[in-house]
Image (cartoon, rainbow, N blue to C red):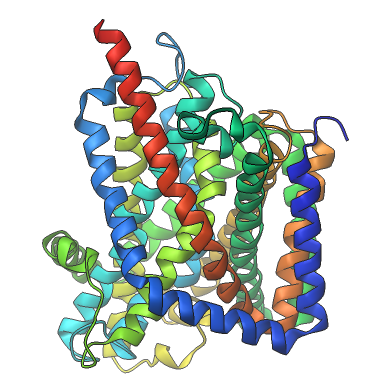
Length: 494
């Protein structure tokens, strides 16, 4: 295959070996990855906490500093995409399926089953559940994505380096990044991307299966999930074949349209006044307690450390495992924007939309729970559909939700195949279709095998394990970026 680098063959081999081991020794695979996950969460929780919070601080600094005027490209370049399409694309790639999967379930769980710090089932837990959900999906995540994407976009479009993670480290390591060390870093990024995206595909297949079961009686199980992944794989490969400016752009705009439609309808037919009041207060709590939540580690025996490991630390590791994929995709679509414009778009818009989303669905679910309808008895993937049962137009809402999940599924996988193609063809912005197809099939195969051997638990264990080594690469990327930015400003002042 033309343009294919060593990264393609090495990572593909590692993915195949991992899948074979997982399929051949499922119990041992889940046990080993489970032990690694526990070790990472317990021993490196403080590290993830400091790292993610530092990314927020760095993002704010870069936005308002003199570096904010620097353009991601030549000084006279205009953005490749309109602001509307740009926001829709970065949002769809970032966390689409997760919003539908956890939209009603996560705030409800924090409220009814295990509150972060307050008494479970109390009114305080209702509010706290929403504010912590904003925390898990808000500024920290998008700051981290933004820093990684900025580094990639800056070196790729302003310094004309290849679109590779390794290329961003040249200010620190020079031409060593063109040798084995650079290959190792790019292999790590591709490997983390494959397993990180497989998690999202697993969530999507499980929830589509749950929705079809709820509406039409389709049996929930591996066989149905296999056929769902098969059908969606065909669709996203067709989209990937059509290219970035067509398939991903149009599907991302469709995603946003469906998401906004579902959000507005539930806001109107749900407890509207309560939703607006809860959003206003709980978003205020999120802002008010931002530093406290950002530095929380629960170090003492009386603290709720198990909750922190299961939720906050898991999320930070999950988002880090997605960083190579989402960062590179956001970088690719952000050409021509200034650093200030870039961060305002990447930080503010997704955080506000996500918070409103969780306020609408989380408040509606919590209100139903208070009225005597026990939604907490259902599996995570079924909470949303059972909530819809107690609202007007239940069937229409459920069908829109399934279409939205499928659309997010396609765009996430489509975007990932594009990014994997870039990373394994020496940074080519137009990776060959045959490379994208191979990665598309590999992603789906990983999702299928991991669902078969251990469900989502095996996938979650794997991504937390994969995230730790890449987090060290992230730190190096930050130092390299700051070194390059300072050098550019010094040259301009002369």
